[in-house]
Length: 424
Image (cartoon, rainbow, N blue to C red; front, top):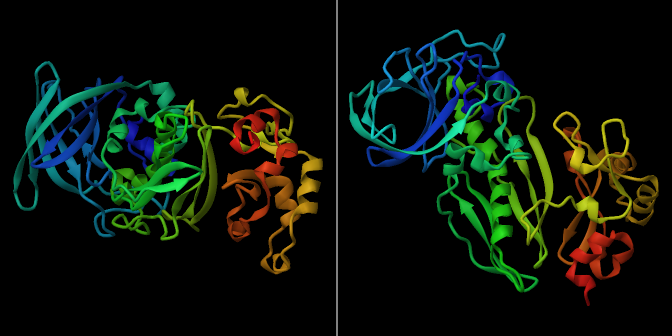
């Protein structure tokens, strides 16, 4: 089985062999005066444990190694030190395996008490000999299924397509902390803020009040989207450690998000909340991920809504381009909304032509056919492009927009019911 922390990383990052365990336990407490969280597996048949921990003020996972032991109540951990080119072998070199033992920064000595509900002990720095007390209280157990874990995508944000963050109590705790609140702004009679997580300098919308509806479900949805966007930032920073696939090209002390990263509120009513996420993410490899995503949520249910499902001319299709029910989508066949030929021609006809397109290399007719989507911005229905190939990131653009008051002919019956602009 792989320990949960490897679900944060891409498959090539670690060649560590992990002993099978049935449960992973999460604890919360302090190391010295610093708040921390710890996740560890129960004692496996070969006497080993796997663990990770994080300072809540940082959010970055640090690997902990446990030597084999037959002691169930007392044990030790060796805490990895961040890598340097001299102490580690990059996961990107050779066959991707590390030939050196991981460098160690500190040693932990811990003892269970209160029937496993409390852990106490010491942390000792190997270089200076400085010792700090460790006090931890049990939070929650996560069942670990070896077969299931071996099939997990190795990036935790992708798990949130089917799992809630609460299924991963250790990771959930990282986000149960206050954000830096931004100034209150107004949108369609609603009030919202852009709250920043200073650990990764990411601002994200939070609703303060709505006319005619509670913001609670919508704020839970927004928090889920924030977590999804944040996870790969923390995972990238964890690559400072050998066990998490250290790569000397990754600067773990800097956010991999570029300065143009942002989450922008685009639409808000007592029925829908829509936003765009955009920016450039780099965590080693040949090129950055220049991304643009539009997300739409139902304010009352807190569920994600596919924006294309509200517009006529889009059909959900499988890999073979055959219509399928979105409820039947799976990891093996996720499916996607695609426009029919008449909608493609309508968009090509209606959109204004930018004379610079040919010079920029944007294959707009092909992109409209393969990557057409929609967004709701302000009081407008906007035809956009999504999921463009990396080389075409500069081609993201709004193709054309229609005021929602004039868009009834474009919308499905469900779409018409969602927009307050059509109530008038």
